[in-house]
Image (cartoon, rainbow, N blue to C red; front, side, top):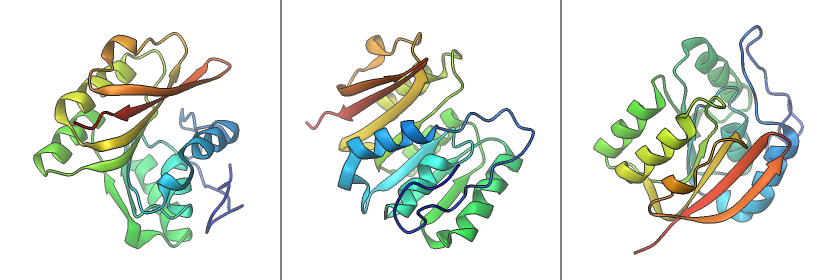
Length: 185
C-alpha cells in the first residue's frame, strides 16, 4: 500500500504483519480524497479506528494541518508512529491509544473540534452506528465539517444521521463509504 499523492506520493506504508487489519483500499482512498478535494488542505483531521493509518497518512501527505490517530492497539499505533516518522510528519501528528468512543468523549471534554473525521470500524460490529451516535452527541465535528464512514453495505446508518446531512454514498463491492456533512446552525 502506497501514498497516492502529495508530499509522500508513492511511498510505501508499512503495515503490522500478522494482524487482522483491513486497510482502506487504494481505489477507495482515491475516491474519498477526490470527493474531499482541497478541503483536506489545512484541515484538522481525526482518524478513528486508524488501523494501518492510511487515511490519516494520506491526509498529512495532502497537507492537512494536523491528524489525530485513534487506535486501541499499542502495536498497531506504534507502526503508524513509525510511518509518521519515516514520512517526516511528526510535528503534525498526534496519537490516542484508546477505545474510539472514549476518545470521542475525551476530545469533547477538551473542547476539541475537527474539520474532517474518518471512521473505519470493524465491519458488521454495530460500531459504525455507535460511533455516528457518539459523534452526534458529543459534537466534536466543526460546523460544515465532513464525516467519512467506511462500513459494510449491510450496515444501515440512515436512522443515526441526527444533525448530519448525507452528501454522498459510494459503493465498492461490499464496502460502502458514507459521507456526511454536519449541518451549520
